[in-house]
Image (tube, rainbow over all chains, first blue to last red; front, side):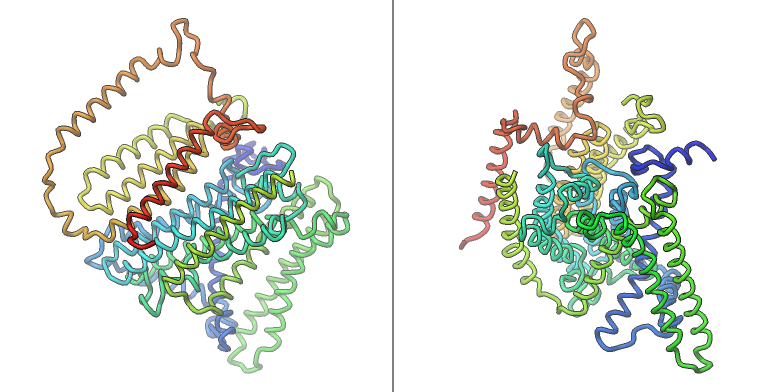
Length: 430
Length: 192
């Protein structure tokens, strides 16, 4: 095999740091495909979970338990007529969804799924992520303006005011977490995403528990500001259905509308990853310093396989519980096949975990370690994603003046106070 | 950067990227002043600001590039667009400009061009003394890409308990900004 493919294998740094353009490209493609797949899954999960919260069934017709519904939706959206309103600003209307999409996908190049499972590591990682994800707001504003219609314009105005207000509280909490990274021998903090996780590894504590309760308060404020930043319920003022029909994307339909949805969900995953990296220990498994014996390593490395095994079991139970009417025959076969696929993945992951149980540098061990890193990172992100759905099902939408009041008069002073207290406690402790 | 030092890695600062980014910045700047529609101008300005951020990256100053994106492209331009959207663009784009400032602007632009040309022509003397030695130590060695943020922090806040060279100026500037913010709030609100 050519040298530029083989030379990166066995390296313990990211492709960007190793200077391997080929593997960086592969990572980018894998992340792009993976995020798109997760967005499709999220779409199905959100509709199902919301339906069950409201004691409905949700999508049931397309595929067993509506599993193929997102694919049907995507096909429908792609085949729809591409409408640009006559009075709209044609070029800006066309470019707006792209701005949002590019902004929310660009940040993925610094997200650390593992010590070597990231496209690259930047000296300014967290600054880059916050900066580029704030460009996503431009897409929404420009979309609302170019539609040349009242509801989109109001949605865009609300969205820009909201994003700018909540970015400040969010920035303050992020700074308090970055301050915590400087609690080491040299006293120098870092903005690099990988180094932030390594700082938590060195200090032996997730930053959510550091200087209790300061880390926890900062995390909670970030978790609230994050929902407002991504325009999700209960802060979805930009697209409030009851007031603005659909807000900034009222005039959009078909593929362009689906690009907005893709950008929104991708931004949700990206901003959850910031939270996971800064406060929840990134790719680290729970209790890496208390339960550090090789036996514990092995037990925790079984988790990915067991998770897929659990999903396969649920799918098998669903197959068994399907009504025994001939109408459900094809659905039953389909669900059984899906369960078998999940079971096969589970088996594969378990085999890798068992093969790589010896902590050496063999291929299986490195594979097992990499799968573990990505698994724990994605599991933490998945908890955030489920919370997004849960919020949407639980809380009514805020009024706009209440939103601003919370942002400026409650969250900003608290986050400033947490920042100052973190600095004071840090100086006293060190 | 010496490509031989890290094999397999192409230097970022290739002339191609410089000309690409500089061209984008100039094209964006031209579009800002020629578009009649204010929102189009603002979008062109964003392109210019992002290209300039790219140029900072090529100068091994990632921190400045990041701040450029987060403050200018992400923050200030959002506020710009926010204000522009409240103006009736339709009418203002059809109005004729009634001031006659362009001769003055042209003179200013020519003066700036002359400055750039002279810097380009005499640039060598600025950086090299008559014997051909550099006047300053090569800054690129000191401000390596990997520690740019830490270097900026050391200059602004000082290291190891001592004040940095710019600590006082930095604090005064932030105090000035705070006063400006308070002034803006007091002037717009009748009752506080």
